[in-house]
Length: 306
Length: 195
Image 1 (cartoon, chains in turn purple, green):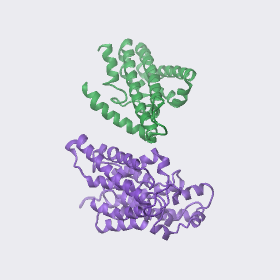
Image 2 (cartoon, each protein chain N blue to C red; image 1 turned 90 degrees about the vertical axis):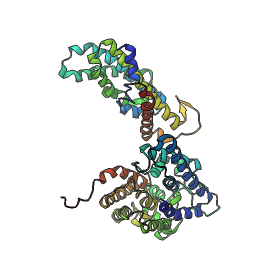
Image 3 (tube, rainbow over the protein chains, first blue to last red; image 1 turned 45 degrees about the horizontal axis):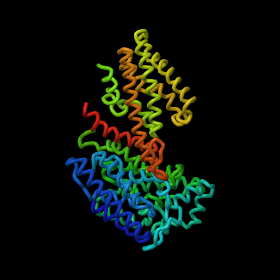
């Protein structure tokens, strides 16, 4: 779990650099609240049935904060932490027993409960600037609303200068953790090098999204945005690297993990293209979380058996 | 079994929502506020009492093979009465509950009590059973509705105590499942244990 925190550090630091101290407050409140709720429930409700693991709760807290809008008030993080730890994790029996990724449950709960706060985005400014909610859209929501209004997707991308290079380095509007793709990729490489995660899930999501958006984009570039845009915007990288690869809620076998990743990719692209929400990665991961017990049946055949 | 015991059973030991886990569709669908839950509970309670009385009275004359269709005819008679009364005198509640009122016909609590209790007990006992189960259902729905209303809209029985919205998720479908689950846990830990 320490490794995951280290892997999340680049994205967190870049975000603090661009959005300033409010983001540091969000990260700290969210992590502290998760640890506190986990400790209280462990001590007063669960008895000795579980082991207290503060680091695991801290990872949930940091992931939750990275999924919030930078201008979100701190109490939103506390509510999200309560939902993530108390409802999504401890109610199911604690660490290792939860069906759904706790941080994502917290985020989706907040998204449907406080739609205004959770979709008020601010533009990345710089350290020590106060975060004002002056700029109101992420690349995905710009595309979503633009296409609905009848403007071709490729023209929107050109007009807003959403080049892959621009999005790769920094300054993508969106959640706290989505500001820089390169920071997230550094975390991914660190996790791979330390052998904390295997690449199957993440890579199969990327390949699925790239192939699917590639086909749609070739067929009708006016309505559908292309692979590079879809891979680098929104929660795609954050979700595919840190959320979908959660040990507890993802399949165990390589085959199962590939099915899992393909499912997430397909659902996420479908929600982005045809759904009413501009972003679908968190919903896609939660939907595939339910399928994980079924995918765990895809076991390799035992030696000498047919 | 005394009449009082039958009524108490319906509220606690055989509580239709938290103990028998019957009638989940109206439980999840209509409890967006305490008033809605209460209205749905009372409508169901009326149908339960009346259909229990009639079914226990005529059960001896109904051939076994056609008993279920016969029960449905009896139940739907009373549901139609409730529906027309509500439409005439409580139009706003009727609008909110909408499709769930005619759906009382296929509510498994009503049919379940007819099959499990009314057709083998006396008219008086069956009326008490309808009352007890109906009260249990009404109480459960009102409590679920109250919790969802307090958390989701910041009001109780329609009286607002905060400005603005509450935690919207509790008014939506996911909140219904979450509140029902936690109330069921509390009920089974603190109420049902004492029996």
